[in-house]
Image (cartoon, rainbow, N blue to C red):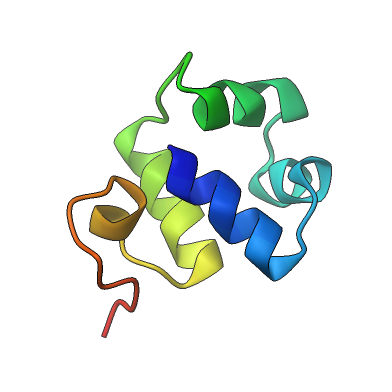
Length: 68
């Protein structure tokens, strides 16, 4: 999920802080960022909601980041 890494960098959010806000470890988030693991659907929705983007945008399906 390379888009996730870019979004966090653009927003100035540290990986550690974002992981804590999701209730997961920084190691788990890092796994998502480097593509070693994938978040389940519920976590994908939580990530998208917390960043105010669509899941399709995070997954690279669309270029439209805005949910509405």
